[in-house]
Image 1 (tube, helix red, strand yellow):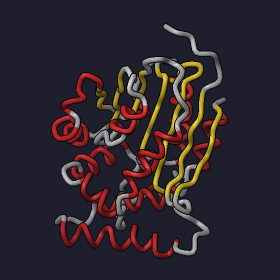
Image 2 (image 1 turned 135 degrees about the horizontal axis):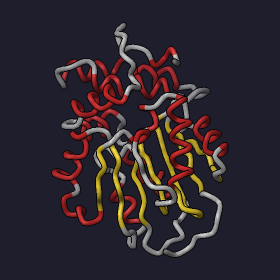
Image 3 (image 1 turned 30 degrees about the vertical axis):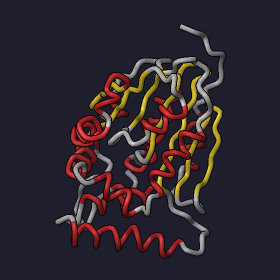
Image 4 (image 1 turned 45 degrees about the vertical axis):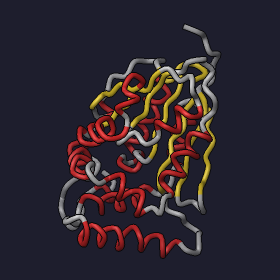
Length: 255
C-alpha cells in the first residue's frame, strides 16, 4: 500500500478505507459547505462551474447520468443551468450525512430530478453503458492510485458510447511560486481554523491531507486514456485545481 495512505497524526488508520472516508464526511457534513467555501476563498464554487463548462455536451436530448462522490450536490445547479433539458442525476456517495444535507437543506425542490445511491462508488454495481454523462467534483482526493485505476474502469464501463465526463479536484500547484503559501494554508491554517472555530482538529484537516496527497489529476487522465476514453487534462488557477474531461468513443444510439 502507498505509504501516504497510512495514518493521520501518527495513527495507523488507512485514510482511504471506505469506512474511514464515510466517517470523516458524515462528521463534516453539517458545516462542510460553509467551511469549504470560506477556506477556499470561494474557489471551490468557481471550479465546480468550470468543471461543468469543460464537460463536452452530451449527445442525448435529455441526458441522464451520475454525480460520483456527490457530497452535498453543489454541482447540480451548474449542471441544470447548462443543460436545462437534463433528464435525471443519480448521485452516488458513501456519506449519509452529506446526502441528507443536500436534500434537506439545498435541493428539496430538485428532488424530482435527483436519485441517490448511498454506497462506496468503487463497490457499487452501476449498470454498464447506463450514463450519458458522469461528473465528479472534489471526490478524487479520497482515493489512492489503485482506487483511481478502478474508478477509471468504472467510468469507461458505465458511459454509453458517445457519453461524456468531467472530474475536478483541488491539486498541488507544483512550480507555482506561491506553492509554499498554498501548502501552508492546507496543512497549517485549515487545522487551526478547525481547532479554533469548529471544536475539532481532525475531520476538516483531513481534507487538506487528502488534497496534498493527491498531487494532481494527470495520472487519472492517463488511467482514463488507458481505458480507451478521449481525455483532456486542464489546470485551473496555476494548478490549484486540475480536471479531466472527455468522451467515450462511439456513436450515440437513442434508446
